[in-house]
Length: 208
Image (tube, rainbow, N blue to C red; front, top):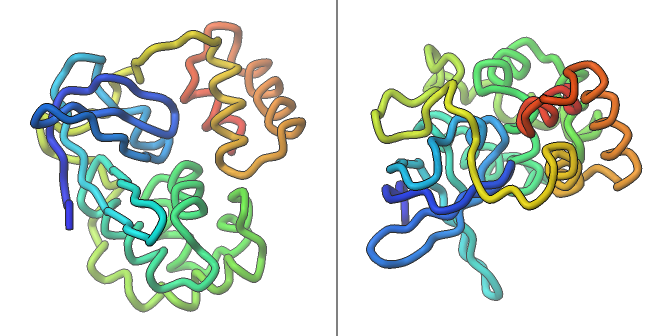
């Protein structure tokens, strides 16, 4: 099992990073909350990873901290109906601390605002995980303390052939939004944040 990857950040998008390590380029799927903390292209980065192997595919999911990685693994393993895509969507909308708080307090309404999560699934998340969160006490927002890990406050960088609004729209579609709804949500977010808003800021505002 691959539990972490350390290398040079070659590319990044709101939901992925390509890390070169040992002569190979690894595609790592990440939530927006991790993507927004990635360093600049060409710098070293460490992500804590969870690998999923299937008969017809394999995928690597990366997070800025071990608690975030462990919560993702617990979420998709214990909750019926929640797979990697929905897990990434949940962790894109809410920081780890907010997710833990919502589950602990039984706030199904907040969880249900995540694309792909209805009321019943949100309630199932609470039932299945409420008694399994002891290991995450004191995790806060899950930010890593590693110098080489994704660093809070660093702007997300990467090849940007399109505008932040277009990238944000594509990210929302990948998270489960319909194209029209994604475009409308991003347009509304851009109206609030202004024309210079970064991609990750638009995504968070559209999700929130």
